[in-house]
Length: 255
Image (cartoon, rainbow, N blue to C red; front, side, top):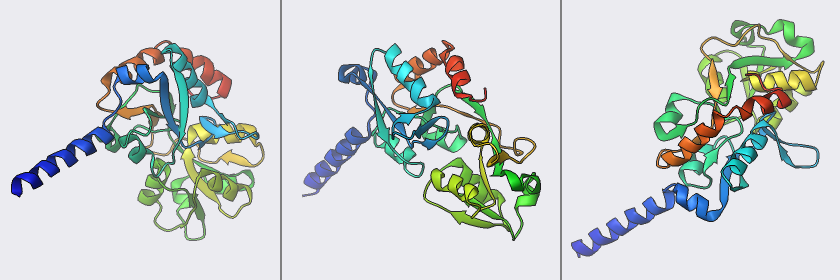
């Protein structure tokens, strides 16, 4: 009886291992598809246009990457709260569309070389920008800070906002709408995103902080499972080709 139980335990482990095992490079080639997971709510890296199409810097980047690898691309919907779990469960080969390199994520996953430099800034409605130039000015009881779950913005807010009222919303679209309609005063976001909205919705969104917030210098990258080093090598080789600089200029992504 013990032997039977032991055998079932081993089989169960094998099944779990099989489910979570990353596709090998050979399996990706055989499938003919590169699967890329994106939340699709992070302009200008990945977002939905007025026609509902997925567009953005990372959308174009990964399309070109797939083409260079002689693969078709398949975009997989994910979310910031579940992106690491979805990748761990092998729902896609690469997580992209605004993923920030962090030490905690790097313990579990492999990261490509830098796709874009970044850091945290304070984004507010332009008619209030002068009030919110520093962390000290926004961390006050009468200030409303809006944030969505699952990303590095929430991590920053949880760590640094002690007195201000924190409004938690379902996604990044709700963050931005809160600033537009002034139900919130500020959001902590990335320089890349803040720069995009400051350019495209002039008079509405302004980066109110004079510089990147202390200790938040970072970079965006593509995240993969550690058990597929060949895919990582091919991604980094393509990034070294310089294609990203052409697309970064097109999408006005800070480099």
